Structures are given as structure tokens and as C-alpha cells.
Amino acid sequence: MRGLAGGVMLGLVALALGIVGFADAQGPRGGGHDRAAQGAASSSELLALSHDGGDGRQQITIVDPRQRVMAVYHVDRASGALQLKSVRNVQWDLLIEDYNSGSPAPRDIRALKDQQR
Image 1: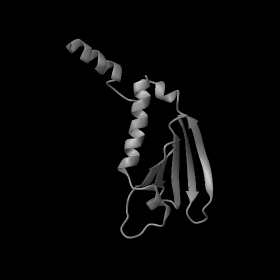
Image 2: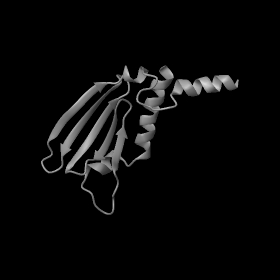
Image 3: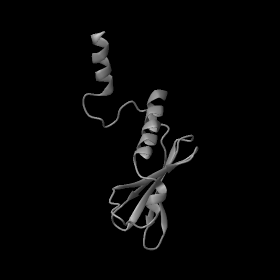
């Protein structure tokens, strides 16, 4: 179970490294920067992901990997107003082996692999 939680956190970090820097997303668009994923930044304690909502707002997701909590904010680009949309402790979510994942389930794949041994 710990491996799953660590894998999800590693995936979030990989996602952050694969998209544009957070600082680039703070300014207005220009110079041919047409990207859906605006940017990401991380420190030793927090991970921030930024996404252009396309409707005049920016979505910022902050992840605290130590406490396993995430928060989602919307920023109105015109006024600069910041609105907290949701906060969630994902600790228990990360303990679920599979949810809404379709077929075959991970346990079915594991059973097939065990049969091949």
C-alpha cells in the first residue's frame, strides 16, 4: 500500500517536471505560448500546479506531499480575486488499490501473473 501512495506522489512530481515553470504561468500569455498546462513549481515541502481555465481564470492546485493534502484555487485574471474551491486530505484515497479503473482490475492482472509463475 505504501508503494501505491509513493507511486502517486512520484507521478505528481513527474507531471510537475514535465510541464512549464510556474513563474512563466504568472504573466499574461504572449509570444506563442499556447499550452493547456501552464506550469508547475515545487519546493521541498509544497508542489504547485497551474492550469489556464480558458474562461478568464487560472486554476492553481497546491499539494503538500508530507501531509497528503491538496487544495484547489481559482484566480480571476481580470480582478486577481482568489477563490478556494476545495481542500482534501488524500491519505485514505491513496490506500485504495483500485477505484473506477475498469477491467481488468489490478488484482486480476496480478492473479494472471501469479499463474504464469
